[in-house]
Image (tube, rainbow, N blue to C red; front, side, top):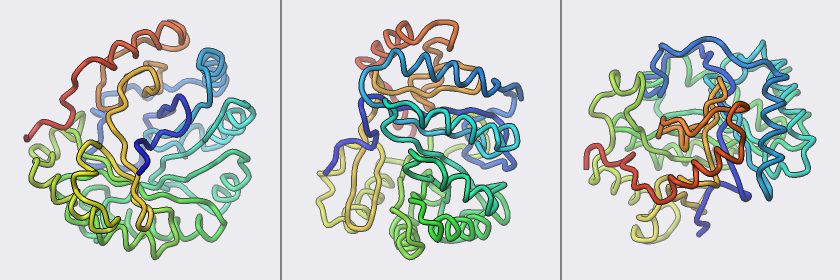
Length: 301
């Protein structure tokens, strides 16, 4: 079993905008963030800095907010086309709710030379559960858009945040993802931050509930639960499962819309700000987190 989901020597989530049409209950945003976002030229400059400072291949996951809303989406594709020019770019992905997606969006995604995966947010096979967490109509919209993406030949992965509200959906959601022709489901755990801390108070999984999740994944993949226990998140693609350990350290980060760097989106402590602080200094700060115990998943244990 692969021991990580991050491909390449350095990987990060790039939150390019706070904008979003939904008010998902588990959202990490507080609702008080500034609407200000950096220009495309500023983002390109930051990309130059990162690529110049990091050795080896780089995996970038473009997200938000909803990245398709960034400057009317043309800014998003301008940035992604620019990123595709770097020889050091190992993998380029987008994480989206598909809100605002149309057939032109699908064509634009298809035209990106280094786009590996379109990662689509979906919380359950059950539309009632999904729309209760996200917003009314999200399920129908998203399934329709997934079909368009798959029909266009794009590689789609479903992304799910597990809480008390949907953790029993694991097996059925994997079956749905397979029936849609996707590359499976990435399961992560809900951490109560931002809006989620208030709207889903007490919804973080207990140790017992997490073991139920592991049991469901083990049953799909035909492995023992003990093989899965060291990992914090999973990618289930058919009968293949890859696990991700905690990745705090100099090999990953979360880059926010204003250039602030967090060691992880679930650890919102600034490690510096780009371009002001420089990538070499930020990498040094990130390295300090690799030996710092974190309790992201211990709220209810």
